[in-house]
Image 1 (cartoon, rainbow, N blue to C red):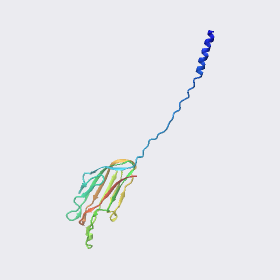
Image 2 (image 1 turned 180 degrees about the vertical axis):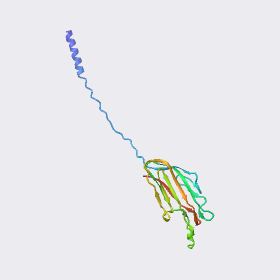
Image 3 (image 1 turned 90 degrees about the vertical axis):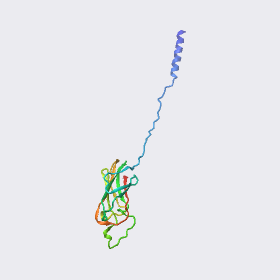
Image 4 (image 1 turned 45 degrees about the vertical axis):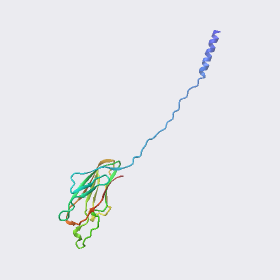
Length: 201
């Protein structure tokens, strides 16, 4: 009787073990999540300063959007044009390949109001003040001469070549007026607007 009892308990234990379900592997979920941004191309003037050594020019105002430079003594005692020059340094940044362009609004410094001359003596007087402008941007630049070809037309532009990578450097712009000892400058207020542009490619 004792042996039968033990045999029954053993059979019940084995039956219980057989009823336990087998565990399957868990299934995971994955997803890729790209993170991105589009950075636009830009050029920017960060600061402007008048380089030391300006000759016969006085700054009326200096600013990132606009600067005004005035010839201190335009003519000598005989009415002849006096030489003058200055350099403005623009701390600048372009985050892509870029170039500098120079554009003259009037084609030279010209009178704001028309000057009436006697046709018989008109050739003895100058009614425009020509100048050269040069810009150095890294290893590239642009040069504009308003006297070239007998006189630049309004809107004349000098376009530099592209510098092929991002650059943070000083854009140096120099304007030079050469003296003219042979022609008298007619009285009047002369002006021009030189537009300096940094353009991303």
